Structures are given as C-alpha cells and as structure tokens.
Image (cartoon, rainbow, N blue to C red; front, side):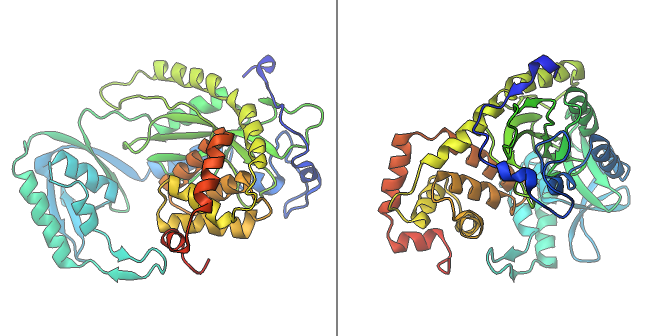
Length: 410
C-alpha cells in the first residue's frame, strides 16, 4: 500500500501502554517498525524464510498423472492399507482417502477414514480400539469393489511424497494455485510483513501476515498493544480456498496472539481447468484493499466488548451459553473454560470469553484453529439485546446441563 493509504488506528491507546516497557527473553517492548513484542517477533518468519520452507517440502514430492489401472489397493508389511502405484506403496492421508472415496462412489466418504484410524478417548488420549490387518483387508475389499465399476483408463492427479505418503487423489481437471506463487503475490503487495503462526505445509497454508507500521498509522500516542494482520489461506489439494481475512493481535501475549477475525471475504475460485493467475492476482489485491480498512474498526469492537459484563451471572454459565450457541463439543467447551480460568479470569465479560475462545483454538488442529478464530471474531458484533439473551440463558443453566458441556472437575 502507498503511504497516503495508511490506515488510521483510532481505538483507545490506553489498552496496553505498558507493553513498550515489558521485558521479555529477547528484549523490551516492540520490535522496530511493528506493534509486535520482541519475543513474539522472534518467532515469526520473513517471506523468504517461508518460501525456503515451502520449497524444501516441494523438493520432496512428486505429482503423478496416471490412469486408474495403475492404482492398486494393498496391505503393506505393517498391516496398513496402502495404494500400490508402479511398484511403490503409498500410505494415504485421511484427506486423500476421502477424495478417493468420493471419486469412486463408495457409499460413505468417511468409512475408509474411520477404518484407518485408532479410536482414542478425547480426554485421556488413550487408544481404546487399535486398528489391525482385518480392518485393512476390509478397506481393500471396499476399494476394489468400488474401483471395478470405474473407467480404468480415466486419469487422476495423485500427490505423493518421498516419505511414502499420498496426500491427494484428484481429478485430471483439478488445477492448483501454487503456494509459492501466492506467497510472492502477498509479498509484493504487503512488503515488510512477517509470517506468524505458520502451521501449514507445502500443500496447505494456515497462517497470518503481521502488518508493519508502514501499513497502519497508530498516531503519536502509539502505546496500544493491538495490531493488525491478515489471516491467509490456500490449499493446493482442495482443503482451503484462496483467502485473506482481517484479524487482530495483542502484542502483550508473548507466547501466542489473542486475536479474532473481523468479517471478511474469501475469494471463491474453483480449482478446475486452467487458472488465469494474472486475473487471480488482481482479485487478491482488490480483496486486500477492501479487507484492511476493517482492522481499526475491529480493534474498536474488541475493546468495546469489555462493556458486556457478567453482572451476577457466574462466568462458567456464560461461557457455557456461548459454547452451547456455537455447538461446541464437550472437549472444545472444556478447553474454552480452561483458558478463561488460567488466562482471562480478570475479565469477567465478553472480552474475556472472546480471548478464551481464540486461545482455545490454538490448542486444536489447523481447521479447529481457524474455526475458533472466526467464531471469536463473530462475537465482536455483539449488541445489548443479544448479550442480555446470553445472560438470561446462562442464568437458567442447571448443574446437569453444565455437566454435559464441561468436564466436571473444572
């Protein structure tokens, strides 16, 4: 963005004034040119470092375009289900199994995935049911039965890696948006940004771009610990769309950002046929232009939700009401409550709940992380009537209802 387009941060500057003098392991206060504490900045990457990591993984993979007749379901020496392709065995990921199931018209796209994973207790993490060779034989029988009805000459795109994994089973017409190209586009438009929470791999991008002070003008009294970033996504194997959503972070949280996504737009681009990259680049730039101005508004909204107090309603009940409205599982709700108890209990209000939700998201897998950040951000649009409805619902909870939502020990 050019200098005259800098965003004006108009939110309350008193929220985190002590951050400038906050001593960490790597230094005190903000890293130069950012509103990111030095300890967190040390955990981020430059675009070039991110590109090097992507390229390292790319060097380990091979995309195959092969007819179905070259794919044979089999069992390896460890009694695991595999696909044999040209005398090599590849262990499919659950994502690849789901894609294969859909394309081969297996009645349920989840049956192979379920037979391929051990059953684990979500709380103790103990394995209750260990899959064995008989499960693998069942998978082979299901796959062979489905494949016998398919055109054996039809070609598929199969993504394999040197470690013997198969990560995708795609149609011949599938076209991917290369993550390296995408990162280059973002670098050209947001120079000086830093890659944060980079949790994806060469196939799928999950992460954020922290925006430098050259993009956001915090004014002369720039003590605020709130900053802006873009949550970005893309997937070469069909998991995620090309996306950029405005997000918030707090630099005082040196072990992990507390943040929530503001309402943003994801680019809808089908991965079929030939993709016009020049056109897509323009779409990305236009979308970012529309998303960035939402960040200062999001900061104002995040600060404003402090006013939604619990009054006399127990915070456990309020957390329960919010978790119930989002239909969180028992383990998810328990994690949100745990985060509030351990990190946010000084904020007996919606602000504390939002931060607890986004903190909880960081403990889950990539999809859960994105989901919880989006849901936390959705609460920034709270109004009085909706909050009163939450409090009324929370105040009516009985202990039996709470036991269904949380582990009773908390």
